Image (cartoon, rainbow, N blue to C red; front, side):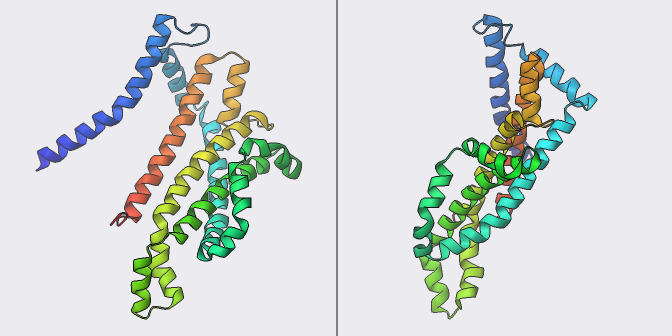
Length: 258
């Protein structure tokens, strides 16, 4: 039994390693073949060496932390404001229909197009970056929570009513749990979107730190290994956040699909 478990874990680890090795392999081939100008594409080995040195020396840690903190603030704001709003809208289809245009309109509007508005409202500081990311994430969470509430399984709701459960208890014991899978889908999407918005905001909204600022600063100074390494670390941040949410989702919503 233990041998089977170890074999399964090794196979899973090998499957997970294929993606990174494929990325590095394609990058190395593009560099070696000259398909891309070597002055514009450093080798993956040099990039990884430089990135490891920056991490080890602490040179990149502050930028990484600042971006992560901004994303965390924006997601917390989006959850606190978005989940109750989504529940209220989803609980009454007529209410949702009355504001559906606004939700879909702003959800379909690129968040980067709202930068000038948030700059006018909040200035060049961190507040503007966090606010625009929180707004974009909030819309995604509202939509998914409302959708989850509206599409809760009617059979379970009717079964609870037939047993004499009150509306508050039906919401607490049935609808809330039915909504969680869709809520986590929205949360994972919102985290990815918030990270994108924060990185872009750090590039163009007067930032002095963060991974976005580091990427654009390295590009301007032609520090290509630093630029590509920072892009890899930003991607790793998003991947790590998604994995963390997936782990929480699988731990909390173990009944999903049953």
